[in-house]
Each structure stands twice: as structure tokens, then as C-alpha cells.
Length: 469
View 1 (cartoon, rainbow, N blue to C red):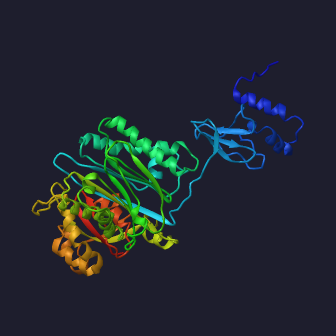
View 2 (view 1 turned 30 degrees about the vertical axis):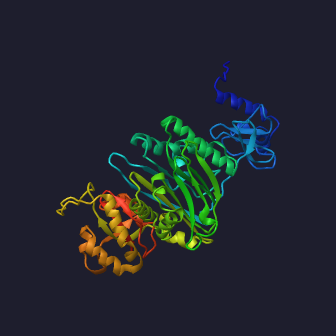
View 3 (view 1 turned 45 degrees about the vertical axis):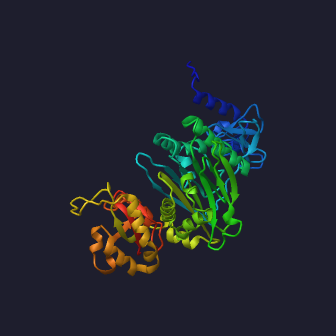
């Protein structure tokens, strides 16, 4: 007589099921599944009848609770709710799900710089913090949308390496802090996290001198601002609102290394935000004038042009490079459906556009190009396009054609009539447009038909784009 010995875990489970199944008919296996779900690889059902989310395991030390190790989440069987543990207090709190306000508010920022010999201030524009957090494998779902961060870093008084390290390091310090607490964040907690990230960055990079910077953190309908070293972050409203409270919101960094912070609740009267450094603020330009310069172009969805305009006037007033400024555009609508269908790249597969190109020293020339090498700097190219921008933006296709034929340094300018500057149909995937810089493709997909773009920088030069279809 031979006996089989059950050694494997699988065999033991089979034996247990066989023993436990005694007294059940085949049609009654559902009873066994409810009483002993672990035998079937199914998580126990909550008392309210809802199954536990996948990946949760029973906690012996906490009856009625389950835990997901990878997500660090607790599931309460009675309520069916998810909880997190506060690392500072060791207490459980309910997991918060962020609200999506992107149907009401959309945001886009850009920046401009003026370098000095051997020195360049920095800027960081992160238009989607949820995507940035995901790339760092951080859970950001408890924060509202849209979520973005804009920052400028002053190279005056520090080395290029320190300014570069600050630009690369602040969001790396900030995002893990924002991801660590998954309840709804109060204003003071946001201010504290931003100040803490700046302080930690200072101790790592420049513990004695500090780093002069201005930061704007957007989470849903709230903008948390911080500044150090004389830099400034300010909110501005529509034209004609400079006498009200809208244009009075600003955070100016003290001369010490300690950051000043403020969390503001945005309203639809807010048009945008401006960030710049002490050299610009101390040039003699008033806060009202700085707002007006940024507003003049930002209201037309051209924040970079607003920054170029501000830095040009600051230099005329005596500001010395290195300089940097960033501008942010808040677009408000109660019904963004039509606009999203028109401008959201996910809803478009192809667009057609024309462009005007000015080349600068160091930019790439197409193979076989026999044009005279440019002698202007990238900054000079930006200023030249800035001066024709009002005429082109308000003059329609005819004005664009005229300036394209007069100034553009691309062979497409030689095309006849309204095809001057035509780039043809562009695919949403930049890789499929081998002859067109990726920056131009991305900018084209943000435009409505008939709209003129912001200043666009690529390896070929500075572009101005008109979407035609």
C-alpha cells in the first residue's frame, strides 16, 4: 500500500479545502468562499457588502482593518474607507482625493533670462506636477488639479553651480513633502512645506549666503508663494483692476535667508502671476509698472513675451544682468469644453501652421544652408520679434505674411502669397515631423486657428507661429 505525502503549500491548501468542504454540497461552495475567502485567493468582503480593494491583507493586530504594503494604505472593513498613517503623530487619517478644477482653470507659464558674462540666472517651469510626481513614483492624487510650479533663481551673489543646483533641487525637495501627507492640505501646511524645502535646499547648497529665489506653487485654486533674497512673486489682475485688492498681492523676499510665504485663494479676477529677482525689482520700476508689462502680453497667452518686455525695460532703468523673470497665465471659464476640444493636444491629431524665424549666434542651420551666419544674440532675436508682435498679433494673416517675407530667415518665407512661412501639416508626435523642431510642434498644438503664438525658442532660432488649420 502506498501513501501520498503532501509537502507543498499548494498541496496543503488542497487538503485544507477538502477537509473544510465536508458537509457542503457543490452548490454551497459560495458559503465556504464567504467564510474562508483566503482559500480562494479573494480578500474578505467588507461588512457593508463591498469587497476590499485588491492588494490588501488582514491585520491581526487591528481587527476589522486591512493593509496595502506597497501603497501604505489602511482599509476599514466597516466603513469601506481608506486611511493613511501620519508619520509624526502615528495616528490614522482618512485618505483625501483631490478635486479636478481643470474645467474651470487652466494655467501655463514661461520665462525669459538675460545672461551676464559667465553668469546666468535660472528658471524652472513645471506645468503639470501630477506628471512630475508620477515620474518620481510619488502618489499625488490627494492634491487638486491643475497642479504646477514656477520658480526663478538669482545667480547674482552666488556661483553658476549653486544656481544650477538650486534649480534642479527645489522641486526634488518639495514634491516628496507634498506627497507624504495625503489628507487635504491647509494653507499654513502648504506655506510650511514650501519654506521647509527652501531651507533644506539652502543648507545643502549655500548655507552661509543662501539662494535668492521666488516660487509659485499652484494646487487647484490656491497659489502658495515664497521668496528670498529680495526676489518677488506677485499676482496681477485684468486691466483696470490695479486700484483694487487683486494687484496688491505680492511676496517680497527679505535680505535674510529666511523665506517669506503666503498662500492665496485665486479668483476669476486674477489674470496671472509674475516672478522676478531683486535686480529687476530694485531697478526703479514700480510694482504697478512690472505688473502692467507682464499683463500686456500675458493676457494674450504670451507669458514669455511679457517677461522679455519686462527685462528689456528693467535694463533701460539700470538693472544689470544676470536677470530672469517668469510669468504665469490663469485662464478661467465656467465651461471649458469648447476650448478644450479646440486646443487640447489629446483632441487633435494634426494642425497646420506658418512660422517666422530669426536665427542667432550658435543656433543650428539646416544642411546645405548657404545663408550668412547670424551675428545677433538670442536675446536680440527675441527683442526684434517682440517689436513686431503687436502688429502681427492684431493684423491677421496679411500682417503675418508681410513680416514673414520681410524678416524670416527660413526658406519657407519664399513661398508665394499666404503660404509664406508654411510648415504644412504637423503631426501630434514630434518624431514624425523630422524637419520641424519639437518646440515648434508643441507650441502649434496649443494654439487656436488664427492665433499667434508666444516667442518660441528652438535649436533653429526664435520662432513666431500662426496656426492656420
